[in-house]
Amino acid sequence: EAGVAQSPRYKIIEKRQSVAFWCNPISGHATLYWYQQILGQGPKLLIQFQNNGVVDDSQLPKDRFSAERLKGVDSTLKIQPAKLEDSAVYLCASTFLTSYNSPLHFGNGTRLTVT
Amino acid sequence: DQQVKQNSPSLSVQEGRISILNCDYTNSMFDYFLWYKKYPAEGPTFLISISSIKDKNEDGRFTVFLNKSAKHLSLHIVPSQPGDSAVYFCAASGYTGTASKLTFGTGTRLQVTL
Image (cartoon, rainbow over all chains, first blue to last red; front, side):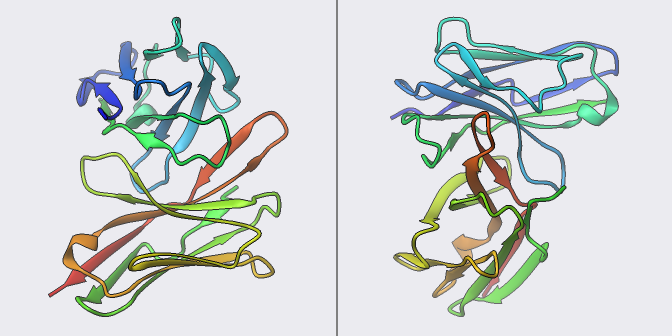
């Protein structure tokens, strides 16, 4: 099966600019996650979707971050305006089962550098 | 508040020897634990997991041990191989009141030398 696809792989922007990341989960996976991984830290959950509904966005900085999954398949994560501290790898993951102990399937991530 | 801690940022082990990676957690509501392996420029991949009702789970060269009273788990790799060189993340799962959430540790970089 094809894995989780993410694009772009790398992005360099200046602070205060906007950026968007795209994710296509594994076919049939209802649950989609966006994680932020800052260098030297573990991945931190930003938002979780179940189909096209938000399950948990408690750690999403909503003043600058937004995410959508309109048709319950692809998802887009946007940052506007970006700050220096947003430099990180943004990982998308998906699972087939809704059970919370289902292992996540991660994409290769988008490395964002904010200058 | 780091609820999942991996206190060793790096570990170097000779090929053929045992690698032991440790993880501690503070939240007693966690009831499922996973290990992920990450190569450079790739996303983490699932390695092995354990439920809180067990104290050991084995899959080939990989064994995870859970000590609930100490809130500690460890991953044993025997024998270690050069291809095991990667960053290993411990993760813990449990309901937080609104939804399930997977909390990751900061990772341990394992280097297996020849």
